Length: 464
Image (cartoon, rainbow, N blue to C red; front, side, top):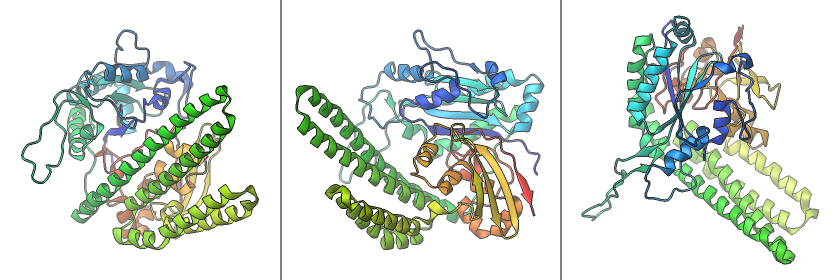
């Protein structure tokens, strides 16, 4: 095991007003009730502290995000799916962070982090920064509102002589989270952390992998745009339901019931389309283009036909429940063929067994096997994460859950990684690393939390 100590800087887009993450960061729910996650020590929670002074009248992180947006002088109306906040986790290898704290240098480390945040993202955009001392490793949760003043990057249309841009501030997470900037963040953060014995993680991969990654990134971006449009359509349908509900007080009951049924049907259909697009997006990220085309061309059409048949049967009569169940079983079988990644570990290892002891304070313990090599590990799952919500609703498989909360290299030990060989490199995006370090913002092999806001207290054992 390497003794090199790494700095960790992890950026992620928030969702909506990000109130769910505010609950975790501030250790209290929307009603102000105390909330302590399972991986935190309640006896040390009083050591946590907010490092940014809120403006007058602002009571919490969620309010601070909206206050910055309201007072930024934006000229354009915000879209419902726009990212309002970027979450940033700042920490380092456990051993070095504990040494920094024990030597009384934690205050200096915090000051260096705040200085880097303000210089990198702007003092006004840094609306919150919370120190957590009640988990295994001291770390910071910084919140940045992505207000930028640079011109939007747009392709020049053919034959266009001049392109005029509107000046002034705008909300743009895309600009702040561009791949080139994420790389710059990692470099400058590592430089700021060097005096504390922390260095940048290893960056490396073949040119072929980089080319493939760029292709997949473009494809995934298209899927995400389609999903965002469908989600906007769902919001419109829900707004329509609220209008229909007002009819009940006007005695138009029959009309209201009919319209509500149609809205529910539309919402269900849109959600189904989102689920299919999401599955395809994840598949693109993990498989070679030729594999994807073969599977999608062969099975996706059958899935679409089966879903349409099931929806038609459900509308016709409740007496056809047996037919619907049969169609759903057929869909499930086709889904296993069309989306094998939903039923296998991203590392390529075999899932022998798993345990989730408590659904309210979720953690997961997994056992994997490659050849004769067995391995087990465990981690905490963020209760408010999207993957946990989908898994709780049976919308995600246990394999998808494991792949989300464990990096491929975290699912196996070093011996197993060697057994998997080239297959592991293809999935993980490079050779397996025993240690973890600074992420590049876009490379999953460099991040300890798989692009998720979770703080795992992993316990691992190896049996041969």
